[in-house]
Amino acid sequence: MKNDDERAGRSGALTTARGLLADCRALGDAQTSAPIAEGALIRAGLADAYLTIETPLGLVYVAWNARGLSAVTRAESAAAFEAKAYRLLGRRVYHNAAPPQRLVDALSAWLAGDEHAPLSFDLRGQTPFMRAALLKAREIPYGEVRPYSWIAREIGRPGAVRAVGTAMARNPAPLFIPCHRVVRADGHLGAYGLGGPASKRAILSAEGLDVDQLEALAESGVRYVVSESGDSYCYPTCQHAYSIPPQRRITFASEAEAQRAGYRPCNVCRPPEAQLAS
Amino acid sequence: MPSDEALAAALANDLDSAFEALALAWEHRLYAFALRMTGRPRDAEELAEETLVQAWRALVGYPPERRRALRLRPWLFQIVANLARNRARSARRNETLSLDVEAPGGAEEPSAAHAAERIADDDPLGNPEAALAREQRLADLAALLLTLPATQREVVILRHVEGMGYAAIAEVTGEPIGTVKSHASRGVARLRLALERERVAAAQEAYS
Image 1 (tube, helix red, strand yellow):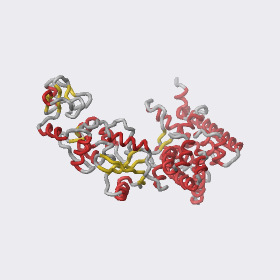
Image 2 (image 1 turned 45 degrees about the vertical axis):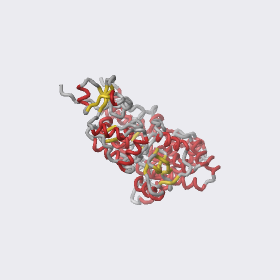
Image 3 (image 1 turned 90 degrees about the vertical axis):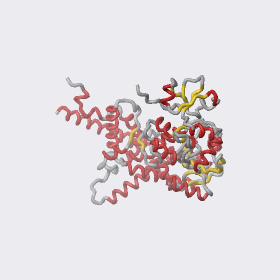
Image 4 (image 1 turned 135 degrees about the vertical axis):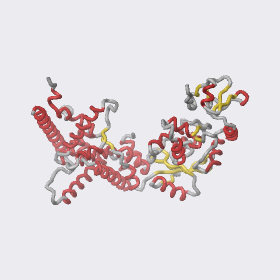
């Protein structure tokens, strides 16, 4: 015996008289991915605003819109920045001499190490992968560094280390999306878009990282460290490891070595787990 | 999302940045309204953008106190409705060979139109079959709305899709409230009748 719905066939998919008004309301939720507001703003001659801010790397131009920061870069002049931003964003940027205090405060707070400074980013032009990689970089604490492979693994694309490098190179908001905290696995600082390796060194030093020490460790083959009393291995700049005095520090050249010695990966800095053959 | 009153006040104080907020706050609602009026996503996108541009041009010319006093929703929807009417009129003028005199909502491409639109689901975790059925049901209803005469359609959409009060709708259409109410009730009655007919037809099909 068929039930009513089956007998009614397609009518099961029809709006009922009773459901009419509820279904009407649902029709108001239609959305589009077309850039309607942006199109209008551009046509209206409105686009992003920008400000300049003093940073450890000197004066930096910061463009933003209602979605968040859209472009951060150095430039020789305001005109040069405006031209560059137009190239990057495809829309004009206007200098805002009286930017919202909340934004200025958030930018300064972030530069001073406040991870909770309320900043958002306009990453519409980026692929989902790029977005994931860039936002993951924001999880690296102030004054610490992680390898490109860490980002790749954390965003579920362990094989995409090179693509992470590309994503960092195309970071639209350096300093505030701290791609300077992403370095090569061999300890070399690697490339940096906002002024090259020297700038990367400068900003990391400004965050209190002893770059020379980091490089010396990497140079001697150290990838992970453990304190004498600890039970987990960390990246050398992890907050759990950084303060270990050298004489109480046990070092490892690989995660396999650390794991064979009986240590597990630190659950704060999350280094990789070794693929040990059983 | 800022309230309309807050937006209007902001428009009076700092037009440039408040307009950006307005555009972002309203783009989807303007699009949704335009989509229900025209049935065509591309047209709806263009109408919504054009509405914001016209709104901007008007706002630039308004003194701050006029901006502050704006009732944004009827004001913006009125721009959409005017643009949609003009567009339908010129489309009719251009289609000299077409016998289609009423439905400006291109009944010729409903499937493409509805494939391109996304309807936010209340329960995205619910089973996909039910979500699909709901999407189909809403698409059918949207198509049915497009069969209403333009005046009824506009009012039914404003009242029942957008949930506006009759006074605000009268502001949009420029008609007396009584006329608006009668358009609304006739439109809804027509929808109910059409749904009932479809239901009966579907049931007969199932038995045959």
